[in-house]
Image 1 (cartoon, helix red, strand yellow):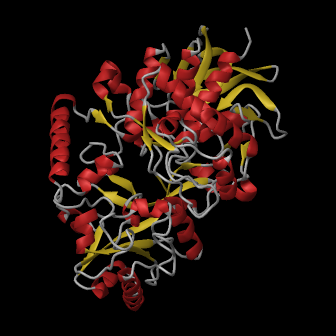
Image 2: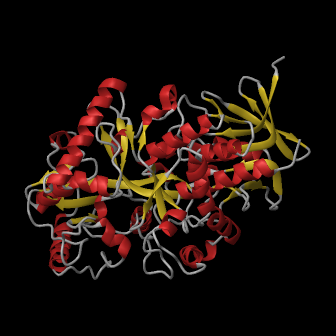
Image 3: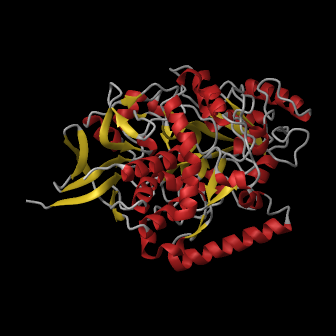
Length: 560
């Protein structure tokens, strides 16, 4: 008979939510075991842009940014409307600043402030104008030592040969390296260091974005004494008188957990059955989640009596994406986060018409696309630009000058035409429709106006633009051939639908009753924002915060 192991808390999953729960519990004195199904840790969080939505965070306060009482709550309520979840929102807003302070003061996780990053919907009451976001400080992966092998490598589509580039000054330097000597020096130093690291270590060591976040959390977990285990499949949760008190592994081993279990397996973005059951047009939604995001946490939670929360405006966190074919035959997915808001690009449908404000949030681009295309037609759009735009900003995975782009033309990822008519024919777009759209757009762009969709009218949109473009940083004409296009389709960062929970991250049953000893964080915890995307970082912010809440609550539980 296999021996029964005992610990205080078991965490299933090693993304931001899981490691936040593990570290907060361990630092508070609990014995913690993290069970990760794959051979590496970090989940989809390690592939993310790394921004973390944390209204009222101490970094903003130290920078002198203060807000009116209740301003973040009023904004979130305006965004969510009838899907507003007061208990979870209030719990999030109260604990998020405490989470940042805890990790800064007691772990290896430290942050940089996003003092100029506004919320997405600047036209709504109390939208933030900056300071509500933070990001993990750059991290030297050498600090992990042998544990470096446990950290998931960054997503190749969003790196430059494996080098992570952080939005803000770092990214601006790469975008302007041919126009600024200072930027050129910065980029040269980073690239040379990266080439050295590839030679010595086989991977980049100067980590930014989600890679830095997960590297710092992994180091924090090890320093706090967390028992980290990879390749561990959990078959079921153990119960005793309505309380979860352990796990049963696929090989029959049992681990008793005196304070409970945290589910943090990353949602169901890659699970065919749950996608078919819950998603809109699932066959057209290309997931950016790691392959292991198969809904394991949701199934474990439901088997223990937990209920799914489907009272959401959207069950998935949308992002427009393009499909990438690498020279070695691998296929990937590129998220269009930055390029859509730059001046000189538009998104069009097969009939050549624009259908949305390209500079608004990535979630909004996809919801507009799905709303504009009939269900019996493919949900396809194209981002269209001219040669000047392509070389200045890049388009999708095509990098700006001086990086060559011949391969992307040969592979068919990037379409080109000497004229707009040639481009339309290459893409299968209506030629007359595209020509008319570009003519109208250009006339208005010269004046810095977009009467159809209002591009460039909020701080969020203007931040995505080009400060050198006047009078509107988001608008420039498309007029210098050759012209280019990339096909863009619906994708998703992760899933909003998850287990129903209370403000302590405890899983609830269908009647709203707490299931003792069972917590959920990250993608396994249903969206605190009702299935909306009010700002950048609204996946990682709640993941870290409710992971922190779960770990802290488990540590405070008085139970033998």
